[in-house]
Image (cartoon, rainbow over all chains, first blue to last red; front, side, top):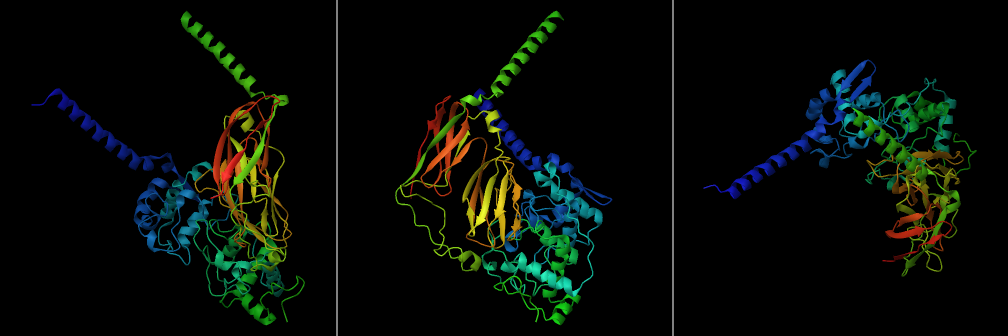
Length: 291
Length: 247
């Protein structure tokens, strides 16, 4: 026979169960129903919507980047470098100043290109609209995209023609700003500071090896290279040189760096013709490096 | 209807009175600005600070005929503990907390070491970063991820002009490093309101403290934080001392 106390106990139990499931439900769906699901992306004439990006993310991205975009997907433990944590709003591949958000176009290009020497593949096979929707969804993970505007995009002047003077001038820039401290005098990533480098998460990280590698983390063209050292790779030891290298000097440096790489470029041919030797860090500044 | 007008009138009067009270609160009486000063001591034997091997960069090594030492614990001859940042963590009126000194804090890279090793500064106070060394440095502050401050990473080659920046949010404390010279470490301690940093004699001073009772916090990178209540009266400087124990 059900007494009053058992009735109340039963009602209490039901109330607790309902409250618990309501709390769980709120926890799970609060994230989706968050205001940031209205996030949009704008790349040229394309407009992407986070709501449309969500199912694409769950199909293509969640395995590495995780359900809440923090880079803790189930694959993350097996891969190195680790997948990006979108919740922080810190990105390597940007056309914007260090410490600022990337533009929608930066993110759109990164997804398409993938990241060389990592497990992030090229997603060009997706449609442009899919990529735009995915970008909107990626942005929704970080409150920074709702509150901050991206930094001012770097203006890259047209590339001048390759000349011997520019390759040599580029070598002087390489010497002046001391790229060789990490990248090494031949770009072999064996500079004096190269073996102690750690990223912002305190994980060991290596500098780019110009001597052996043909493509960069954030692209493969001369413009990509220009952008990389002028804005820096946030989250890594690679700083921004935008305040210290003038646009004309920057193109000279691009050409010198190309001469260090293993491809048959005009820059490499010029360097060979000039007999350009690696810089000598211990020599006085005025000494030239040709024979 | 009449009673509605009456209630509205009373409400209006109350609002005006409240605003009046608030505005009198905002006015800070400069003549009564107080000070908090004191000494910070380290009890026990200070740990041995290892000499730094700067041989990977001869331009750095050359500047130190006797090797520089790590600066995690810096003490003076009479047991004073340096590089402790003292600030008001509770009780400061919003008006005083909003005051930002116009003098910039200078953060220098000299002898391939940060000078100062620990800098106190207010939210929004100008920070001027200088490279006095004949070598390239990169300045890489690492504020708490996901917090109110966003990190950045800038190169500063030899001979570059100083650059200015500031922090948006309180943070105790932001570690700063140079990726090129891995031994270089410092802290930027971002607070609101008056602050002081102790020297090797352990002495610190907080200026421009309005009269009131506050919680004072002292932070050290190795020994953590300690708090103390302090009362500042008009024209009567307060003292507060802290003692940290060497482990």
